Image (cartoon, rainbow, N blue to C red; front, side):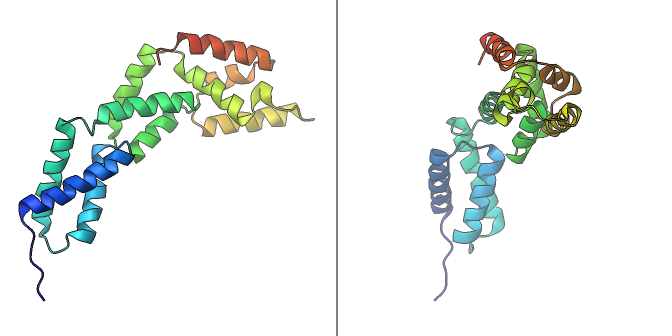
Length: 191
């Protein structure tokens, strides 16, 4: 029994169905959608020549972009807002965007624009981070304050925050002071 190669229209239809199913469940980047479609084609359309598959995938992606189902810029903005609200530093957000298939330049440009729009966003993210991770004034005080301070500085540095932000956050004396500062920055945010 020989396998027949499906027509170009049928290939595109199957890839479009897979794209719609995937995009109906997940927000995606162009690069991630391309990976999903290539993986699908490798499993389900193995008898089709790779050149035909590549052309069909690009056509499906172009249709998805044309109709607004895939919009890398909207994806970037969504991830930046979500990252900020989750207490992630710019470096963490940049890494996550790159993992999602966004090129470094586009991600950096969007982060710069976001920073220009909201200069306190990184500071606010740091305040959210220390609240969630129970650092700074949210920590139960230990016997050795200097060791605790050094450990917390290291945690915040690994999370991608700058030394200036780390020092200002860890210099807060009380939970009330941290909450007031967070509320003040929240009020200034455009998102």
